[in-house]
Image (cartoon, rainbow, N blue to C red):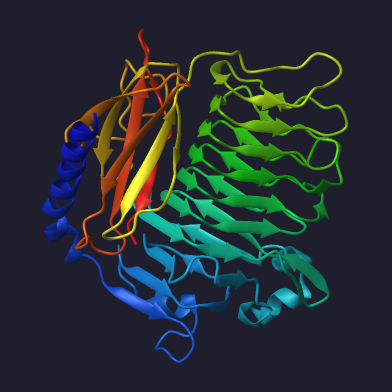
Length: 398
């Protein structure tokens, strides 16, 4: 097996190199930070072209808006803080609560086919005054395809992360509501496709009963593994509407006040190898079923070795496909959303799970790969149709 892994790792490297000509020409790198041409992220955003890379030096920066696909990466993960700065608010909003409440967000609204990559950023849960009105910082995603990698998103007084009509991939990301408000939800996804691995979501203190969930899913799909979902006050950890589709594996869901760990009102999905808090009374639950979990052990660094793990049944086969984009490509024989185009995403090999159901895959990231380029591994397993797909793992190369 070791030889097979080495050969396929080389094949990924060769494929990565083959696309350099099409990626490098479209990308420019802008350095953001004190004593540079761009002291604020919003300054670089104003001049950047689609697919450019913003490399952000350590520091604290103001909220910003995005209307085209960019890669925004902390030079060192965990050293870049983004907060709500009322200095950038229209002064007229100080006179109107309706205007003031529309402020405070880092809002990313890009065309449906544009890609946004956020890597190593921390969105701070500060609250600032706009006139006499307290306005919380939060993150809003609209349309587009978003990758959040090793990010921290917190809000005090509103939903920390809200996504509308988009594709969202989250890896090693923390989302938390740290305060109170009408809603204490950590994340709310509407009409979106969500893929998540190795993430934590924590609800806050909602003024309304049951409104401090870790995740609320409305008319959306969620494929998640190795997640920690913790409810805030008097709430379930996961809530869905009737149009939701959810697959959840290898995760822990904790409710509060004897609430159900999940309130699943949809008709498609199941869970596997999850730990759920106990509750009194009947609960609307996902049905159990076999799923393939996935998590990335470490990030993708040029010249380094990246390893991903897949969790399934003992001795099960796991097929792996590689892609450079997350492209919605539904396949009738795979139950979950499939995001690897059949025409441009090669199958790179098969691994066999051990007696505990664990399989791993390692490959060497090309030292010449450009900043901002991404590589994704898509795992699939099963002995009957439909097959089960894990959330894609990998991400932007650093």
